[in-house]
Structure formats: structure tokens, C-alpha cells
Image (spheres, rainbow, N blue to C red):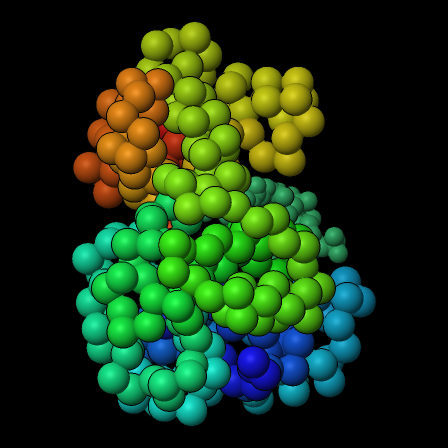
Length: 291
Ligand code: CAA
């Protein structure tokens, strides 16, 4: 299938990044969120990140201008009637996603594809909540989307070969690399990454090291670009906890038990960078460890 126009549901961290890369690759993009404030924030982030790419000589100012003009913000999914592919990039919550598909399906063209950017939830189950499981696929982008080269592609049990091929082709057009994953909890990247982050939180919880020691250890001792606690704040502690819960419930192995300290931070509303506080406090000039 030929994809010309994309709809993205959710203008947050992942949704604005997805809109960014599709618009730069020449696709028309309809970007939807629930309120104007979220939409404005998403668009401002896209502009800021594109300006960063212009400043580093990765794209030209003209590329930026054209890409921004290709993005149509909207508060209503009714504007998705002519998209060829709708990508859901909302909060990592199954009920929220199912509700979005319920609103989306009656609006979409019958041959339009639906993708979800879920980082852990079953593609087969999400697909079965729609009117088109054959035309449903997991396209899991990494954060920050404009920088990270990988996209995981996940087929649900009913995903057709045509849908898979179209998904594969479109990711190649974004100059990204595909890793194909089977539909098991958290797929490949998060199956490996999140238990590592959770273990870093246990290391903190048990007093083996402080925030800075743990992050320095993994940055300089394992050559990770960010320490695991810094990365957790970057992903969002609510998202990290949801993924651990999906692993814990889906695989029923105690090794996936979310660390109580991670739960406590989420309960406090300390969700990381997006709320100004997580394992670091971002409200001052430089991030300060919170323990
Ligand atoms: N948009 C566009 N460009 C961006 C950007 C953004 N949001 N963020 C950073 N960049 C660019 C910078 O302009 C810079 O470009 P050049 O290489 O051309 O100079 C480059 O990225 C590096 O940025 P910085 O120099 O500012 O900072 P850095 O060297 O510390 O790198 C980073 C930042 C790329 C985010 C790096 O720290 C990193 O790779 N961190 C790990 C990220 C990671 O693991 N992501 C996966 C998270 S897990 C996930 O997403 C899955 C899930 O479901 C939870």
C-alpha cells in the first residue's frame, strides 16, 4: 500500500518525535491531542528540535520550514478521514489506547492501517479491539525519535503480510533500521532495558550506591550514553513502571517485580524530566540527585 498521509494521536514525547520524522521525510502529518496546550507544546518541541538539527547542519532551514508546514495540528480525530496510516502514541495505558481506537476506527478509510507505538502492551490484544486486526501493527520508536536509529516492528497474530511490508517500507523511508520482534511483553528493547533500569533502582533502594555513583558507574564503566537513572527520568518513571508491570504480569517471573522505590517516586508524581523531578531534580540550573 502507498502511504502519503499519516495521522499521529498524541503530541507528547513520542508523538511529537514521530510527527517530526515523518514530516521531514516528506509525509503529510495530522497531529492530534486532547487539548490545545498539549498540542502547542508538541509543536514547539518539534520546532526546537528541528532548529537544533539546522544548527548542527543535519537539515537546512528550508527543510525545516517545509516540514513544519506539512504538520496539521488538530484537536479532533475526525481530521483523520484521509490518512493512510494512523499511529497511536498516547500514554502507556491499555484502556486509554483502546478508547482511542474506538474513536478512530469509524473515522478512518477502510483500507487505512493502524499502528501503535506501545512499548510493551500486546499488539494482538490491541489489534483485536479494532475493526481491522489484519491492518494493525506495532511500530515502536525510541526516544528521542529524531536521533535514535531503531524502530521495532511487531506483528500481531492477525497482522497481514501486506501490512507488515508496508510498515517495513515506511520505516526504511525514514532512514531508520528495523528490528523485528515477536509479540511478547515489552518486545526486545524494553525486555532487556527495563529490567536493567529496575535493577539500578534496586541498587539505589538497597543502598549499594547513590544516584550519582550508579549513573557514573554505568556511563563510564559500561559506556552507556546515559546512566540508568538518568535514562529512567528521560523515559518517564510512570512509563518505566507500566513496562515493568506488563513484564511482571505477562511473564509471571519474580525477577520482573517493579522496585518499590520506583513505585514510590511515581506515587509522589516525581515522574522524571517531564515533571521537573525524578531521580534528579531538574528545577535548578543543573540536575541535582534526589538521593
Ligand atoms: N531532536 C533532534 N536532535 C536531537 C534531540 C532531539 N530531541 N536530542 C538530541 N539531539 C541531537 C543533538 O543535536 C546532537 O546532534 P549531533 O550528533 O549532530 O551533534 C545529538 O543528538 C547528541 O545530542 P547532545 O550532544 O545534545 O547530547 P548527548 O550527546 O548527551 O546525546 C542522547 C543525547 C542522544 C539523548 C544520548 O544521551 C543518548 O543516546 N541517550 C540514550 C537514549 C536512549 O537510550 N533512548 C532509548 C530510550 S528507551 C525507549 O525509547 C524505548 C521505550 O519504549 C521506553
